[in-house]
Structures are given as C-alpha cells and as structure tokens.
Length: 240
Image (tube, rainbow, N blue to C red; front, top):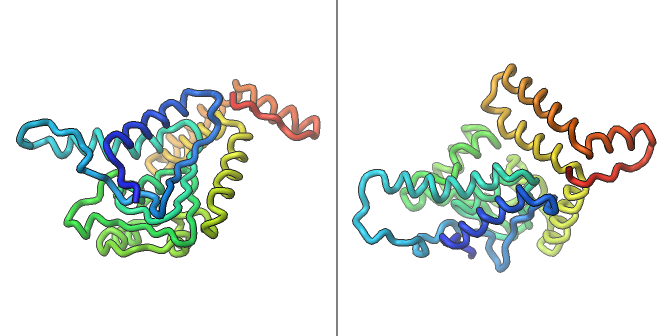
C-alpha cells in the first residue's frame, strides 16, 4: 500500500528539489504502483536516535519529516500532477492534495485516518483542506475519518478529474505533456501567486502579481508568446 518510509520520503524530497532546478524537467507526476497510492507514514522505517524521547522531539520530527515532505511539493517550481491509483490515507492523502492538479482512478479513496488512531493530522492537512474545501467540510473529514470515494472527492473540489483505472496513466501523461510544452517559468510564478493568495491581503497580492509579471517578461517564453500571437502562429515554449 506504499506507506512512506524515511528513505522514500527523503528520495522524493530530493527529486522534487532537483526538478525545480533542472531546466530539462518541465512537469512532475507523482503516482504509485500496486493497488494503493499511499497508506500513510511507515514509522517503522524511521532512524532511531538511540535515546529516550524528550519534550520537543515530536514537534521536531514533524517539522523535519511530514511538513518538509509536503512543503517540497508546494514549493516545487514545476507543476506537479498527482495520479492517485488507489487508497490515499493520512500523509498519502495530503501528498495528493498538495499537488497542483489531482487525477484519481475511480476506485481511489481518500482517508483522513489520523482520528482513527487518536492522532492530530500532520503533513499540513489542517492547512490544506480548509483552503481547498472550507473549514466545515475539512472538519467533517478529519473528525470522522471516513473513507471518501474519488467521485465525492471530485464533487468537493479535492480532485480535478476522476477516470477509469485503465485511463489514469494515459491521462496523467497527457496532462504532463501539455504542461511540459507550456511556459514553465510563467507556470511557476502562477503557482506561487495562487498558493500565496489565500494568506495575502489585496495590496500584497497585487504587489506580488506585478513583481511576477516583471520577472516573467524577462523570459524568452514571454517574448515568444507575444510574438507568436502577433504572427498568428502556435508558440514554441522552451521553459525559460
């Protein structure tokens, strides 16, 4: 069920960091093999400190682990697509919700499993869900921990599109290819603006928008977009 081990988490964080800085990477897809997308965190794979736990250890573990994991997705400078093939529970659900676009196979399920274990949600769940579906819906999912079918997740706005299982990989590839052919820097700046929008007042948001426009107009792709429009041809974006 692809529970996230310590090693796997660190590898994904590193890959997302590499994707941000590699001009050859134009889009990212996060998916899984097997019947599950991600069953949550596998704490059995965590390195041991060899000492008794003291006050502050848990908060530090969360900051350096689950929160850093989700932040790597949110901060990736390339568009990130989740292709959820099966159950996404706990940090697995939050991994999907942190992505820029979410595709789900029809059998997929999303579970805020923390309450079932007597735990507080981690991995940014209480940050992400209210921004995606509002506080009341977020509380319902987190208070009860019920399994949310993909179709209901789409209805709530947690998923962009639900597809038959045999079309998930094909659709994810099509979306990634479309994104990869787009103006990569403009997409990165757009992602930053949208992610910050719910925490900004109008003046701050407008200032950030103006700054993003200033930066983007220095790119080759912005010039290509305007030129191709004037010349009435399809733009050829190169990602810079």
